[in-house]
Image (cartoon, rainbow, N blue to C red; front, side):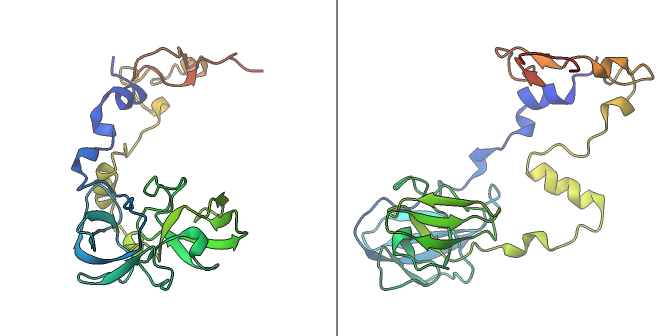
Length: 233
């Protein structure tokens, strides 16, 4: 019998993100002293939806960060200098004025940036109490972080990536494949009996429990994981 889709997704690398294709780790530098930095190179990363910029700090170190809208090669940006709040400036969120758009925000001070890293995304600082900074995420959720967490001022580039229409389903297929997503998907009950256990005219099996053990291997650990009870209440 054909292996169900959910089992194939569990054990096959085809449906996983191939992070080995990434150009480099994208993290904020760990230095604590203020300095200037130069954008030395802009590049496309097939692993990410946002372009990357390579910046070189005054002390000679190099790091990669998501590029902001308006970035260009040779541009000078500041790192932990409070006198500037222009796009690309890297500051502690406690030093950024209220109402400013930021991205690549740290959840904990020193983690390099965990939030707002997709192309065209940005968050907004809405409140600063001195001990906590409230940030509004693109989803509308408001989180409160410590003022020592760092972020980049501005909006990530490539905001128009969703505006181009697909025109035909074939283009959609290439996009989904690049993101390791399974598309298109047929309903199991629409398949033949030999293709899926829910297929064929006998569809009574689709109402049976789809539970699995918590210790099941990848590919078999699908459905309800170790449920306390099954069946219709």
